Image 1 (tube, one colour):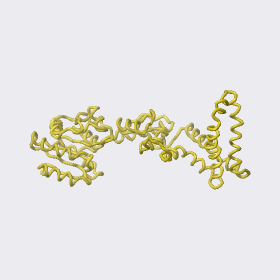
Image 2 (cartoon, rainbow, N blue to C red; image 1 turned 90 degrees about the vertical axis):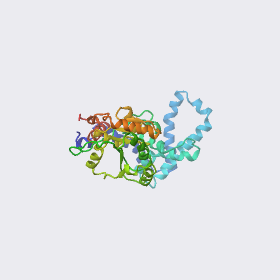
Image 3 (cartoon, one colour; image 1 turned 90 degrees about the horizontal axis):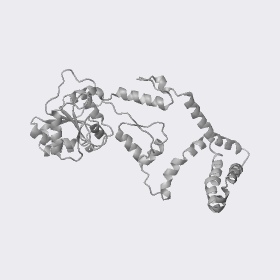
Image 4 (spheres, rainbow, N blue to C red; image 1 turned 120 degrees about the vertical axis):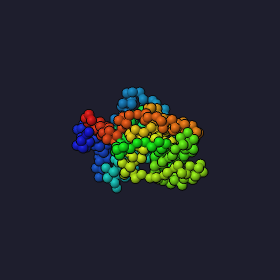
Length: 363
């Protein structure tokens, strides 16, 4: 494990580079503030342009680039006015009322401001939440995803341009179930908040088919939420109300969750979307077989051979067959291989140290 002192530390090179960046970026605006004591904003702006011209003009002449400038003189003049003369004058004028430090910060936000305003000037490409997030994510030192699926989605949707995303899976740590806890024959558990996208209704729809093959089959739904009335009504219409129990487990009571999962014959997770399902990891950590939708983060666990996969949209009878087969099968992964929250935290700590320019110690 890494220490708090190491987590708080950065290498001297990192601090020096950070300080140099701040000085180099902020000095021009500090000097503008000083120059305004004796010059008007317009004179200061044109003075900056003249100095730059005297430096760059001989270079352009030596490289033979002046001909292209003359051929496009109107465009060059318009560009110079819009890109230099007007902004330089506005910056100098603004610094009569605000500090040079605030000026530097505001100028640094120009790329983000332009991206937001560009939609008002005919930008056809949709600028959604992912694109906006990409403006920030591309400048991050390190990026973390909880699954390969999430890392790929982040890269594609935020257009990270090949920037790597480190995958650190969620942990599945639960305390050991009470001594003597065994799986109850026929018990199916579906765990998670009671929302439609969580797919509890799909397990209820499959239950009559399961009962046909396993007469003592019954379902325990662990969770609470706004979709509970619809789930109870569905169970009533399908004639399985007496086989469906919906009960919440306090989030802080990890022992109760461990016991509830350990008593299952199979845990079923048919969510439309999970970046990386903690409920599935918890079921695997107590050695229970899992049947899950082969999509998103659950699909990744199917690909790894940890979860028995169900094709999204499969009919209830097909889902039931997978559930029945899993009931008589062992867990597909050794619980010792399931990440814990301690291992997750340690990986994050080591990534932080590496990002801060320090060499992480072995765990």
